[in-house]
Length: 315
Ligand code: APR
Image (tube, rainbow, N blue to C red):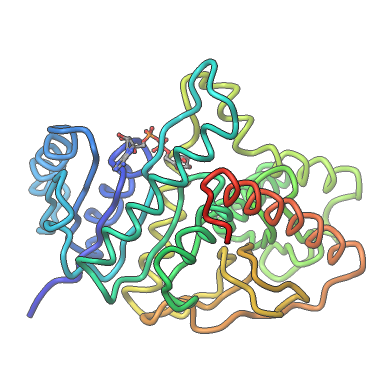
C-alpha cells in the first residue's frame, strides 16, 4: 500500500516549514518543488537527516520537475516572488498570478485527482484564477487564510485574558487582509462568549490587531513575512483532508450564491474531509457583519477583475 503524498510548490519559508510540519506530524510523504535548482533538494536532504531524531519515516523529496510530484493527494502552492523595490503592485500581481496558474496546471497534469490549497497572496484572487485555469470542481480547490487569521484572533484573546490558547475558539471570515471579518460574537473561551469577558473597546482593539496580524510581523522582521503560523494553519487543513476529519474551518472557497455572493472566492466556514470541501456552512450574520463581508468581497472582485485585465484572460 502506498503512503499519501503531499506536494508543496515553492520551497521558501512557508513551503519548507510546511514540509517539516507534514513530515514530523507523520501525515504524508512530501515532495518539495521549487524553481531554484538544488535548493529543494538540499532542504529535503536536511529534513531527511532529522528523521531518526524526530522519529518518523516519511519520504521527503526535493525537485525542480513536476513529474516527481505525480499521484499527490494534495498540492499546496506557496510559490511566488516578494515585491522588489520599483516593482508596481500590478507587476507583482501579474508575476504571481502567472506563477500560481502555471503551478496549478502543471501539478494537476501529474496528479489529476489532487486537492489544491493556494497560499500565495493575494490568495483569494490567486485561488479564483487557479480555479478558472484548471477547471477543477470547486470542492477540490481552496485558499488558506481563515485558519491563520482565526488563530491570530484566538492568540490575541488568549494573551489578553491570560488563558490557554487551546481553550479559545474564534472564526474570521472574508478576504485575507484589512477587510477580513473577525466574528467577535462567535468567539468563546470554552463556550463562554468573549463579550461576557471583555469590554467592547478591548474586543475592538483585538479585532484591529488581528486585521493587521500579517503586517505587524512584516514590520518587526523587515525581511519578509510570517511563516511558522501560516505553515501550521496549512498543516491543519492538510490533516483534516488526509485523515477525513471533517473539521469545520474558515477556508477560501468559490461561492455560488452562499452568503448572497456569486462567482467569487472568499473565506467562509467549510467542512474539510477526504474529498476536499464537504460543505459550506452558512451562518446568520448581523447587518453589520454581512456588510463587512460584502465590502471584503468587493475588494476581491475588484482585484480579480484587475488581475484578469493585466493577464488579458478576460474574454
Ligand atoms: N515555481 C516554483 N517555485 C517558485 C516559482 C515557480 N515558478 N517562482 C518562485 N518560486 C519559489 C521561490 O523560489 C521561493 O523559494 O517560491 C518560493 C517563495 O518563498 P518565499 O519567498 O520564502 O516566500 P514565503 O515567505 O514562503 O511566502 C510564500 O505565501 O504567505 C504567502 O504572501 C506569502 O505569497 C507568499 C507565499
